Image 1 (cartoon, one colour):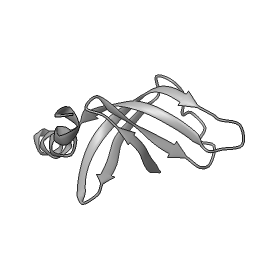
Image 2 (cartoon, one colour):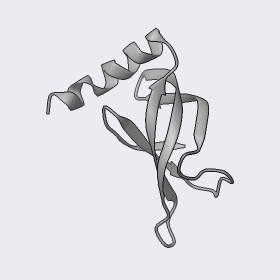
Image 3 (cartoon, rainbow, N blue to C red):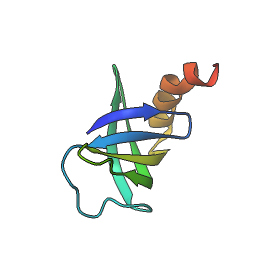
Image 4 (cartoon, one colour):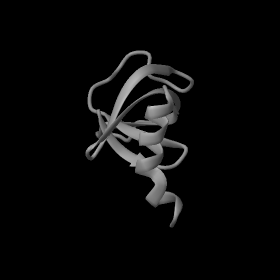
Length: 84
């Protein structure tokens, strides 16, 4: 799935095909998130699902990096966003 948007608290991703079970409060454990050259593992907690008519769905989720190295990589990616 493609990342649609990113913030220090979460991300949204595009769902091209319907995915059963993806709804608010769904937990996506052990997701591999790649943003440019940086990749980290995290659990995602889906907080909203937007289904625009005739377009792919967009899911918003909170990010919970799995370990210290994953947290470091996540913070590396969002650091420029926090300065704005």
